Image 1 (spheres, rainbow, N blue to C red):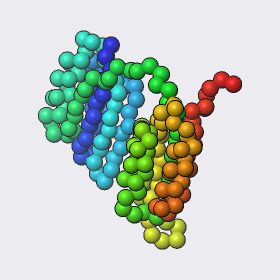
Image 2: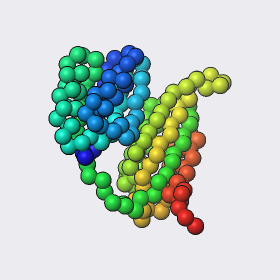
Image 3: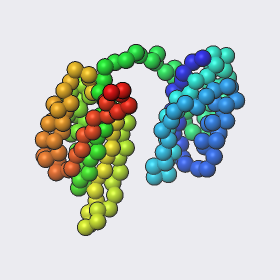
Length: 179
């Protein structure tokens, strides 16, 4: 069995997921994890699948045929071998504030400077109750196990003041661990 990462992008229309899922199932693939979204008429996503070794070439050919229809741009690459436990702390970041240029850049810069990886990020700009627009973000982070979480918290809280946003950092490292 081989794990493959499939990325797709194209004009949104009904049935795109069904076409992709059908190709995967036709070659014995198992759809394991995905992030799919429609943004301003564009459908985009990434899917992790497990495919029998003998099904990879057939799946590749079927995805190439699907791509040739012009419905989707598709790429498929082998997933990197899963690493063992890395000693990371799992963090969740929630942020909300008046929308302005540079919020994602400043936050991601502060995280990267501390070797904190952004594993998932969802953002939106929504109308504020009293007028204007709010920027909302939620991220799942992986921080090095030897990095004190308070160091991340202090840096982000100082930055939140500069950016004039409300920020919450939640330590999910202990969630699910036995007492």
